[in-house]
Image 1: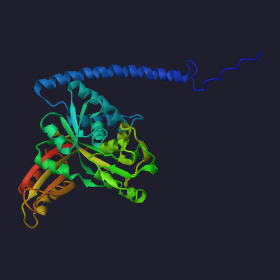
Image 2 (image 1 turned 180 degrees about the horizontal axis):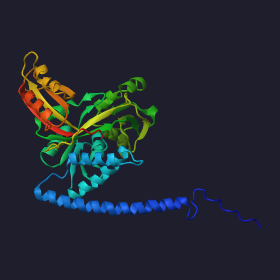
Image 3 (image 1 turned 180 degrees about the vertical axis):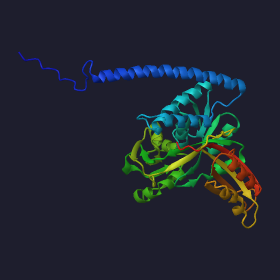
Image 4 (image 1 turned 60 degrees about the vertical axis):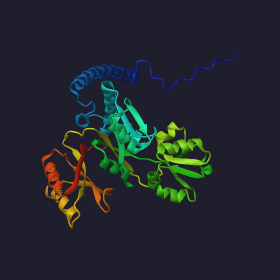
Length: 371
């Protein structure tokens, strides 16, 4: 008779009543307290929402959000750093926004684009997203109140300004109320093996951001342009010979394999997005103001227009120019200033600048936060 073989011990199993069990019991107890506290917080949020609806106040208040996040980061004395704290509370606040209103956010679609991901990073998973085919459509959706806010790209750290967005700000009365910084990592993805790739498709800016890799590893392969990285992924998903350059989110949505990861030229490739709505933000003490203007055509006009900022020691963090489209060789300038339009030095500089301008508009002031 054979001796019964003993079952091997499960080395990963914790001894009954051991230190691991006690620690897990402690976590369970804290989680129960957290759920109770989150529900109490949700009750308070609901009451605030009722008051806001009564008095007609906006549901989303970017300056209050940023002040709360900064306060929580300052108060944290434990292991959690600023990034995890912001990520956790982003979802808590997203759930709160959904309790107060069916908040709708327009962004450049389809689902899985960098604009969609930036919007998710800002507003969380609990609100409703409206992916749209063009940046102009995002502006229109907010202008017509079919969306509460829109998210649009404004500049990339390697490719520069998104000119179409700049032009639309000149046409629209919408205001900037927040900004988002999103780290961009591009990947070559496809449903086919690498050696069967005969074409590569992506958004024109993305192709530009991967220029060095393409010149070295995709010599002779035609490059096709698409309206978005997500649309490029959809094309690759239907093709027997085409790869796309896109992000991980779009690759997952369209069930594509990552053939090469992080092929962007710059290791610090970041795109800045703006949140647009009908109102701007109140001061937080750490803000940025964006404006656009045209100046009279005379020698030294731009120097004279910008001199007030130098006199008042105000930092101009960005300046771009675009053809005005109203008159040949007339240009519109887009400027970002550190500070809020209601801050006394900024208000004084803007008033002096206005006197030099044939056209002048403050696009908005908003928290100067890097997400």
